[in-house]
Image 1: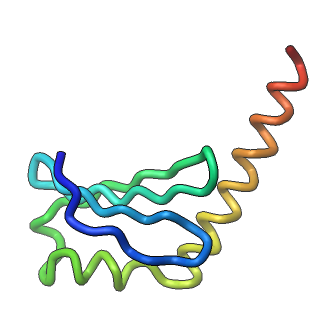
Image 2: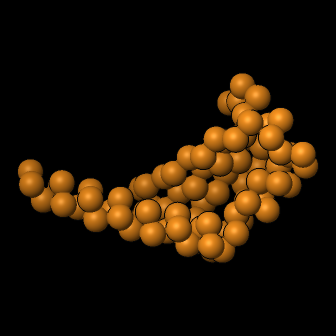
Length: 80
């Protein structure tokens, strides 16, 4: 796996990797992460297309999932 680039964002750490003819888009928020995979051949402009995918709407949905993940983790942790 090789890092292609880090995409600057004020809320998330976004890293683009390539491996086995796929791009991996890793989005991190604190100790949580979401990873999305897309075949390189599905993107005509390569990594530039990945950046176009990262719209405000998409990233807001990621943030919503991160908050759900945090809530679920806190609930599970409190049961210890």
